[in-house]
Amino acid sequence: MLCGGSLISDQWILTAAHCQEPGWKIYATLGVHPRPGKEVEIKSAPVVFKHKDVMKIDRTHDIMLLKLPERTDIKPVPLPDCNNRPKIGDTVQIAGHAATATGPNNAILIVESATLLCLNTEVVDCQELRECVKERDPQFYASRRYQHWFCCHRQGVESNHGDSGGGVVYNDMIYGVISFGDKPTPACVDTDGYMDVCAYKDWIESKTGSVFTKIAKALECLWCF
Image (cartoon, rainbow, N blue to C red; front, side, top):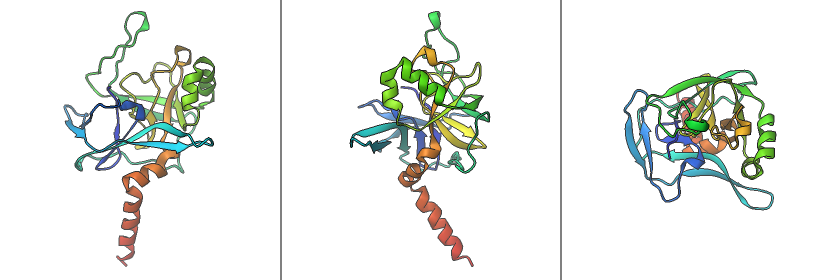
């Protein structure tokens, strides 16, 4: 399965949980822009966000962390400033290698784009998408309703197969992870659904150790005086 992902530190990639296939090896290509990049095998087990609902049932959210076998010097994208989140109507940027056209009868072309494509889209309220998915695809909605969404739409701009896991960037920080841009149902094509990184930021920092890194740096500064 072809997916996108965002390097958020010198050793961690943030992507979508549905990008993993049970039993398959995972490879990451670092530095896809400019190409060709460097392919590495992810040897550590993927870290997926889960929580127990009121019935004590494990619920998996479509957000995942992958740990690189070695640190990289490629510049990562910073985690979001959640006190300055993009508002409805703000422009954000998405990127991916997915197909840019459809085949006969609007069939999706599973063909990787030769270059990394970046497009602007606009933040919208998720309520319309939630209601549409709930009505048109109740089973899909049941698997997603408890997750934290972040939604965007702009005429002529949408994510596709292969874009999943890619980042949604605002003010040079990552605020979203592309989750179901390929649409659960054709009736809901107007809006892309992303995972809201701010809702998972504490979890991300706890798993990657970035919280402890920040504390350590703060303590170092105290010793400077």
